[in-house]
Image (cartoon, rainbow, N blue to C red; front, top):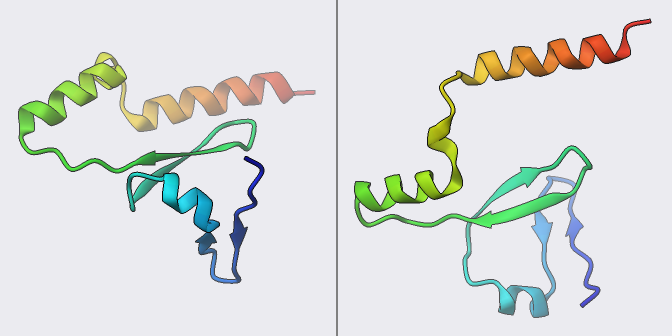
Amino acid sequence: MNETVSLDSTGKMYFPQKVREQMKATEFTPLVLPTGDIILKPVREYKTAAEKLEAVRKMGLWKTTKSIRQLREEVYDDVGKRFKR
């Protein structure tokens, strides 16, 4: 399927009817990859906290002990080292 998604001047995305019919959800979290590709992950409502925790474990998010700030600083340091002249 080679359908095109368009953006209006306010940044709203418009999906063709064929694409909307295949989507099982109506809310998504966008993930922007370093390549510029965008992945839309369906937002899922969890019935219990245990169900949500299990989903987080499956995604591997529970493995990190660093804060987002620490991770961001490491990325900036790495990028800075690569592009220093």
